[in-house]
Structure formats: structure tokens, C-alpha cells
Length: 448
Ligand code: HEC
Image (cartoon, rainbow, N blue to C red):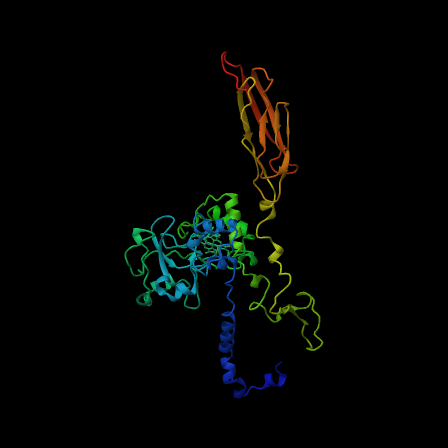
């Protein structure tokens, strides 16, 4: 603590910093940078799979991977080992710092690679008449500092004093013939940066809810639903919206697979805070005891309130036995969506036809669980001529349906098979069975 006498010293010497003090922020910053550069979470199951261990991902996670790279369009923005286009790799390679794209409402715009307006908060952006449309948060489109300099590189290099230093923009003929010719940045060309945010990497994403810059989305399943519905403010943001933000048409099973794949990005050393992700105790000041109306005097500092500190306990290199809970203890997939079983029976009706005294061929029912968890079923039927080879089981099951037509007179018969799974969505299912028995034609040879 600074002694009171030092505060009273107003001589010139008391206002000087020593060299080590001047350099302290630099040395401190470098030390933290060096330490952080040792924390690379590159041993997730996705990494193991990409390194050639084909059993590191389950079949469902591999399906999620193919949706990530295909139907889900995630890879357009979450690309490369960093799972983001806003990577050091792309910035170092100056050809990738700025890019052009074909916008959702057609036309070409230049933008900062890796930063996208994905329609999660309303931001209409710069309008044709040069006024700003309604916008919750300009994000990358904002300006800062006393000089009001643009945060975005696209706009920064468009300024007359910087245009000569603008990096080249790579051609992308694979995306569109309109992007095939090399064109330097034009100071007046359209930019798509208003309401754009940095694409975050997705490593250990399971551990870091809530999601998006405003924490507006709580679970990974909800993130996937967000993309599946084509964002929340696609229409108002159209001017700046990335063209990959469109309804995706993912099925429930595809969404679950995508979430499973995202969860395979967890490096278990991070989850358990094992070396190199172990750490000493870290304490931060958290205000003063009690609230802003009442304080407890600090006996060691007259006239001051007793400070409160919060500490993260230390963790050794072997890590925690039980990992820390997620923020708000949220599961990545809401249990109501994934774990509830749901009964499905196919087909909805069966039709048998035969001649007097002849057995019709057997048919199959497919009983399946369209939800999660386990589904036990049992079956009953309403007719003596109708039977199933198994009358209970755990889905998926394929009971054989038999019809005993021996002794039945010509005519039309109906019955019902009922599949029940108590308390399960979709239960019970009634399958109607129709049997037609026709008279033998005269002279038809009876097969023994
Ligand atoms: C148009 C580019 C783009 C596409 C396509 C895209 N993302 Fe994103 N993603 C972003 C941006 C930008 C953010 C940050 C948004 C914000 O903070 O407001 C983000 C954020 C996320 C987050 C939250 C990260 C965090 O730490 O908060 C997850 C999870 C995610 N995306 C997964 C996906 C998945 C899965 C897909 C495919 C279905 C996908 N993204 C498709 C650009 C994209």
C-alpha cells in the first residue's frame, strides 16, 4: 500500500517512473501472451478423427460433421482448424483479410473476412440514401476513438489516406463468375459490415453457454434451431446479411447429429482443467461487503469498507475429478427435445387377401422410437384370426402379423392391432387390418 507520506510528496522526483515501471505493462502483456500461446485445445475427438482415428467420432457425430460441411453451411464461416474465418492464419495471409461476396439480395459487397451479419440482432445498416437504418448494435460497422475511425478493415482501407495500402482481394471464381477478375478495393464500393460480428471458434463450445455476442441463446440445440430457421432478423438485415443465412430444412435427427458433432469439439483436458489447462488460484476484487446502502468498516483501513474478493480455487496438473458445471447448469441439448421417447408404427394399415382355405403371406409392422431414451411397447388385437409373433418388446421391433384364414367363409373381415407404450408421445397406435377371403373358382387346384 502507498504510505500517506508518499501522497504528500509533490517533488518532481515523486512523479517519475523508473524504467522497470514504464515497461511493466509491456512485460506483463508479453508474459500473458507467452503463457496463453501454450494453451492450445487441439486434442478434441474431432482432432483425433481428422488425424486418422476413424473410431474417434460415433456414426451420429460423423453425420453431424457432414451436415456441418454441407447442408448446414456452417463451414462457410466456421472454417479451418480454428473453426473461424477470423483467424490469425487469414489475417497473416493478407490476401484473405478482405473478401467479396454475393449478397443475399444480390449485388457484390466487400467485407472483413470472418465477420458476418448473421441476423441475430436487428441491424438494417447503411441505406441507399446514406442514412443508417434502425440498428441495435452496429458491431464491426461502428467507429471508435476521437477520430471516429472505422473498426472494419474494409471501411478503414476505403478512406482516401489508406486506399493505397489496401490489401489485394483474392478472386473466388469457384463462388461466382462475378468474382473471377482481380479487382482492387474501390473506395466507393459497397461494404457489408454493419451488424457484423466476429465468427467465434467452436472449440470447447459445449462448455461456454450462453451463446452469441449478446448471450441471447442458451443451448447448442437452440443455436442450431436459430440457423435452421434462417436467423431471426434476416429480412430487416437483408442489406448486410450473409447469403448463407437461409432456412436449412434440417430434420430433428439432423439437428441432434449437428449438436453431437459440436460437442465432440470438447478437449477433455479443458473440461477437467488438466495440464496445460491447470491453474493457480486466481482472486479478483468483487466490491465491498454488504450492498450500496450499508457497508462494513474495514478495521485495517479507517474510513473504508471491507473489500470482498472472489477466488477460483487452484487446480493441479491432474485436473478436477468432477468438471465444473456449465453456466446456469444448462444441458447442451434440452432434455425435453432429445430424451423423450416417441412411438411410431408403420404402416398405418394392413390389407390381406386370400382364397378360402389358403393362408395369405405374413406381413411386418415396424415399431420405432422417433425420440430419445428407451421405448417399451406391447400389442393387443381384436380378432381370433389375427395374431403377432411377439406381443411386447423394446423398440425398434418388427413383429410379424399372421392371419389365419383357414375356416373363414368368403367375405370381408376387419380387425385392429393396438400398439401401446404407456406415457409415451404418440401412444397408442391403432393399425387397421382388412382381410378379404374370396371363394375358390371352380376347378382351381387345391395345393395340399
Ligand atoms: C454467415 C456465417 C455463419 C454461418 C453460415 C454459421 N455461423 Fe455460427 N457464427 C457466426 C457468427 C458471426 C457468430 C457470432 C454471432 C454473434 O456473436 O452475434 C457465430 C456464432 C456461433 C456459435 C456461438 C459461439 C459463441 O461462442 O457464442 C455457434 C455455436 C455457432 N455459430 C455454430 C454454427 C453452426 C452449427 C452453424 C451451421 C448450422 C453455423 N454456426 C453457421 C457465423 C456463421
